[in-house]
Image (cartoon, rainbow, N blue to C red; front, side, top):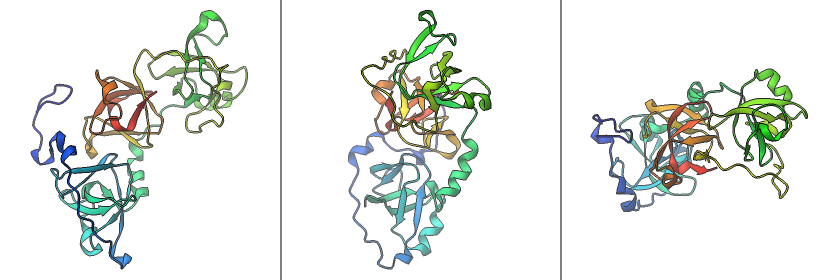
Length: 293
């Protein structure tokens, strides 16, 4: 087979399914949850976009895709269902929070969301301090000086910026009038922004200013997308597997799309987009979990 990067090789055929299967998914006969609720148990999906299928196999019709850590109730007895969890050859019959029923790959399930989050914590990076503008059209300048010849571009509200200064001293500047921060934006450009118009990336600002008086953001030269869920996986290859995980991205993380036809893929289930994040890491993300900035 050949992947989107034109690399060729062999893959296990039992992990493949036809791309058009979405259109032929069959309804699953509804199963009644046992009246004795002590015989049921809860599991959580450990993959974003986990497939719920009409039959317990890779060729079972695709009913829907589930978000990361979707809570699922087993429709199988605890005595037999529990031993399937994390088994790489088993499928579990489940019901999600919306009442939809189907089969999911048991090797993408866990009993404890917290335990799984701890396992992937090592893959999450916190290499840089990220800040975001609290106003639309924030000036991105070549020097820490307000002048016509220092303006590089204007940034949209919420744009991700990596601070290029020591974290401790940079945090003291945030929100302080007269202070400037040396930053890098997602497309790779470096410059300065007014520290009193930014907030920490993991602490969204209340009352973001965007009115008729706000300057307009400069149109992006690159196609920049934002994640719509927390914990979206960036993967080495466009497939869901434990060994392909590079890192997990927070909600609203900004990414430069590198795939040529990325515009057409945005929001489309089953499609992947090759991207570069603010820290320079490159990988694939599920196109159905991103929107254009």
